[in-house]
Amino acid sequence: MRSLRTVLEAACSGEKSLASLSHKYGRKSLSYSVAEHYIRDRYRIQGGKFGQLGESGEVQHDPERGYWMDTQLGTLTLHTLSGECEPLRYYTSTITLSGIHCFAAQDDVTDELFAVISLINVNPTASGVDQLVKTFRTPIVEIESGETAFQNVTLGNVPLVGTGIRVHISLWDHESGDADEIRDQIAAVIEDAAKKGQQAIVGGALGSDAAVTAGKVGDVTEFEIGGVKPFHILSLGIAGLIANALADDLLGDNTFWVPAQNLKNFADPNLYANSIRYDPAMGGDIPLNWPPPGIEKPFNKKGALYKAFFKITTTESVTPCDPPLGGG
Image 1: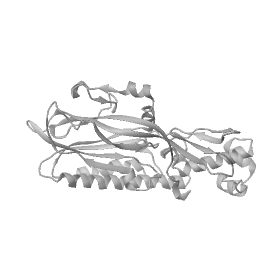
Image 2: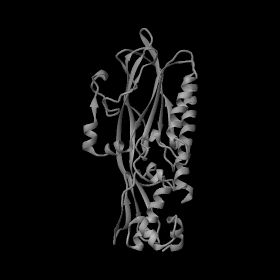
Image 3: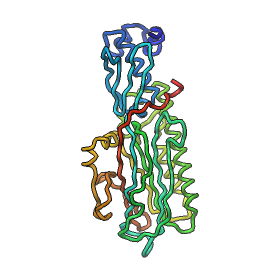
Image 4: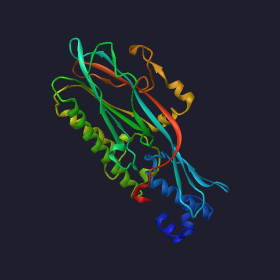
């Protein structure tokens, strides 16, 4: 067993005693209290409810298995009090662009359409910006009202985290601008914002801020830690870029948020099957399940009207979590 003094120093903010440790976790057993401290501390430095484990559950015990905590997206296990916690994540999602449908072109007959798409996954334990954001642009295609572009394009595989996944799309009518330059500028803004958001969550986790480990994720857009709203940074950064006129015509931009629980539900075959629908406007033969009916976001600047639809699948595969924050 690790030093009990070390556990008391780390777990108890006031009196450093066995009684205060037991009171904190509501356990009569000293071993149970110590195990709960180890598990919840490891949960914290995995990013808490915003990390790859999602929202926390109750710490449980079995003589053969040891101590463990099932979480929204995985599990944390402590086989012995002298051992190390083993965090495992369970889910990975694949995001497919079902299509972008043109209800009304901006120009008289056709638009020269392209999209810049970013997958945003603010994982506190991600080691590089390429793990937080993936940005690419589509080819430039000629499209008229009633047609659907970019059908069944796989955007990428993303490990689930408690903050869910965001897909940012901006639609453009190509005129005289450089489509690759637009992509690069958007990528830079989103990557910077995602990194700042990640750093805010990391700072909260390492600072033992209760906002990281307590309660539900809720509206992550309004989540605030240390005076910073990480996901506000993201939306403001994109808005600031879009406000600076780029050479091509912007037909609209939207960020689609898919909460972690929805993504997890798609791993259940029945829930997934029930989520699939077909939009008659897109021909009725292209499967999609996001956004749900009623929360679709139109792209409708400059007289154009477009909508984007996605198909999201989730697979369950037990995988070790990323290394903990601060080296554990």
